[in-house]
Image 1 (cartoon, rainbow, N blue to C red):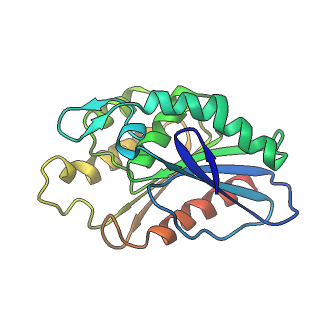
Image 2 (cartoon, rainbow, N blue to C red):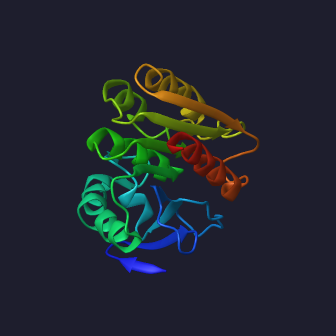
Amino acid sequence: MLRLRNCGIEIINCADTKPGAVLYFFCAEKVDITPAADMAVAMIYPCEWNSMMTPWKSAGNNGTGDGDVFAEEMVKNIIPVIEEQLGFKQGIRGVGGYSLGGLEALYMSTRYRIFDFVGSVSGSMWYENALEYFENNRMNVKHAFISLGKREAKTNNPMRKSVLENTVKIVEKTKEYAETVFLMENGGHFTDISGRIERCKLDFNSFWK
């Protein structure tokens, strides 16, 4: 696994194939992802998850709001290193993430214009002010993939109960300016993580081809 400042990185790519597309995906823990022809998945494992995957501070959720710092590090240093290693030039680039990583991925797509695709898998749209932010800040992408577990809103946590309602509203807003796929998955937040990420990857693969 490649180690860069603030994160570990696993590049999943078919041997001897130069990718026409790269998907950068934020995840808290290592998961099994299968290679796909002509595209690469760069799994990013941030070292300080609650800090790096929260775009702004939240008093009640241990979110220290260093997402901007991490996003700048991604764009200026991490992405160029990965793409140089892959020999990637003038292709399709996507960003996605799981849980808080989905929140950070959507946020990055509003801050930068370097991504064609954005994916949020079980994204933490319950996070304080997330709905307001995405209703007022457009994602700079052509295609969005957003998924959520059917049981994720069934929680006693009053803030996290809002995840389904918020996600649906964000999806509707995103549909106003980007091709958008919304998928409701079986189970709760920790159900079939690898499978959910694979479905995001497959949607990205279908989009760029």
